[in-house]
Image (cartoon, rainbow, N blue to C red; front, side, top):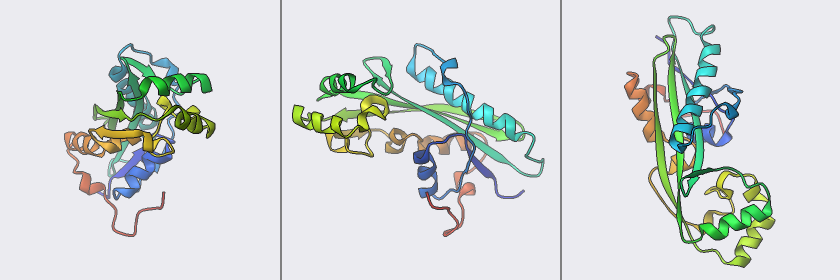
Length: 212
């Protein structure tokens, strides 16, 4: 059987970059699902359901393309930040972002990422949720105002990201750091193993990985 195809059911450049940096060359297939279809009260259940929905949408389309002598593995992911037991998305405006940062100072929240891997053909699947704790520092009011002025907090869930200008205001992460970026490599390895696939079988030779 030829080298398995790794298909990422996401438009996220960060998730694609995580995979490429780790030695994979994923195909990108955007799911196009309506995320408002899923609204469980539990945040972990929500990200799990959304990851499954995304992976299933792409796997269904691939079913007509993949032949019996090849294999594709579709990876769907969805991330949400949980604060005081509730999911937190992008702030609606600067005032909401300001209030959120003042409330987060010196405290911690949870970043959940649901993962679903579906094998094509066959439809076997494995899924799970990775959770990391994000500990916030204590930026001053002036630092918060300077950060708000960049516009970045209005573009990211939770009004913060470890990749951008808010990174100095995050004191630490407990758990897998790739999960905070949107795709947990350790969990992906476990889910692939559940499907009988070694993650090393998906590596491409050095020099064969496309640039992010």
